[in-house]
Length: 330
Ligand code: UT7
Image 1 (tube, rainbow, N blue to C red):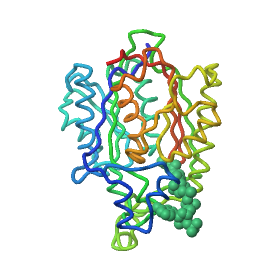
Image 2 (image 1 turned 180 degrees about the horizontal axis):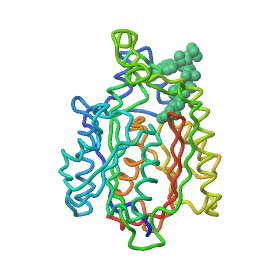
Image 3 (image 1 turned 180 degrees about the vertical axis):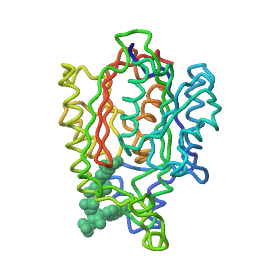
Image 4 (image 1 turned 120 degrees about the vertical axis):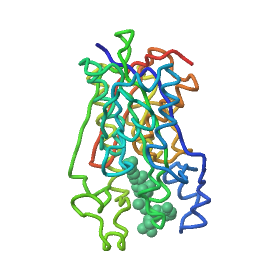
């Protein structure tokens, strides 16, 4: 049995924070942020948790497919900003959504979370373990970003993207292959030092601002260009694909310069690259499903389009999925 994405939905909070907001609060400029990252604005949620970003995205996804939450077999939430360490955000989403017949779990792979989750959802459908998997990629990064650190504060945003994965009607379409890598040597290049079992929350950890994201930007940048290009080249080679066969490349949105470097290495023109980083910043596990949902809503994917998703993130983790678009234009 072949698995396919059969519905999409996304949600971003309404409050827009342009680069000018940071010019007022930090030693930075719109020109620096735009030229070094490609980001013009992002959204931050005023209230609520990651599950509150997911629920409206999931409702749109299910409404688009015309099924009720009760028809979902499994909820997977890819996130690095769970509502709480325990229980899983998937359990909270299940309750808020009313997906009363679903089981589910969270998946931790930071920016590669959606791609890893799509691999898991695909295998569940292919094996017959589930008939419908609601795969959510969501992060409320404003809850873990240090507003006083200009090196990270300007990079991230809040958002959620959701897809439904079910059996494909047409065996030639749907999710065809994946390549996933991991290199745990990257542990501290991008991490949140405290709050887990290695360093539980304490007065010291709060005073020393250790519950925020810490990143060695240039190290992650170099690793991201190489890592994302590697998984993408590997998947093209394995499937005998030339760059001209690819209708759309859907890369994780961390930095426009990373995306441009990867596209150049692959020989894919930017007109075939999904780009929305300028409007949302890096929404971590949400970047790829928000891109899929926006492009699908706009009718930019044609049935049968060969699409490659590629991600790189903390861990280090990297992953690529090759699929042929199985949905009709809206
Ligand atoms: O999504 C998960 C994976 N994450 C990523 O892929 C992110 C990867 N890294 C990056 O995107 C880039 O490394 C950054 C955008 C984070 C930084 O860009 P960069 O060109 O690598 O800058 P840098 O860190 O080498 O810093 C260059 C200069 C430094 O000043 P000095 O030491 O040259 O005087 C920084 O202090 O830019 C300074 N700087 C800033 N200046 C103005 C750093 N952040 C800012 C800022 N505004 N917001």
